[in-house]
Amino acid sequence: MMKEIETYSDIELFAFLRTEEGGDRRVSEAAFKELYTRLSPRIYAYCRRVLSNPEAAQDVFQDTFVRFYKSAQAEREMTNVAAFLLRIARNLCLNAKRDNQHHHIEYEDFHSAHHDAPHENSELLGLITRALDHLQHDYREVFVLREYDGLSYAEIGEIVGCTEATAKIRSFRAKQKIREILAPYLEDLSK
Image (cartoon, rainbow, N blue to C red; front, side, top):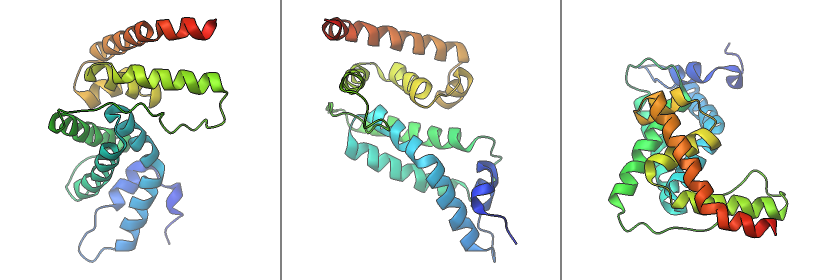
């Protein structure tokens, strides 16, 4: 008898996604559902922050999991399921940005786990969100992966296809640019 599905690691669950001839499809479905439950908030947040458009983010988010499930059918060695999903989402976000050259900026706040945060914090979060909209894509992407997803620079480099040093530089420049953008607002808030 199998142990509870929640007790398996992401890598073990990914292995269960492969549906062999005569295999138990219920195990594959349960594994996918568990991975989706674990990783979907992170992937959606990434898509939402990178694309700044709720409809486009939702489309890319859904497509990410469809491609993820299909990719599990291929023979591959999996070492980091979350990073693999982020790489799929990143590529789809890049495609969406390229295909939508008439990008418009949405200034609504992102869904935050801190709905009950004090007004100043939610206002600052909104300002940071707006500042992100003004960063060039390479800087924004690294900033989101580092500050919102908590990835190491090595993991970021692997996902975006750059060196660890380049990821650090992009993160530094993103923070620098955000500080420049927010400086007038922060002065007003401190008064």
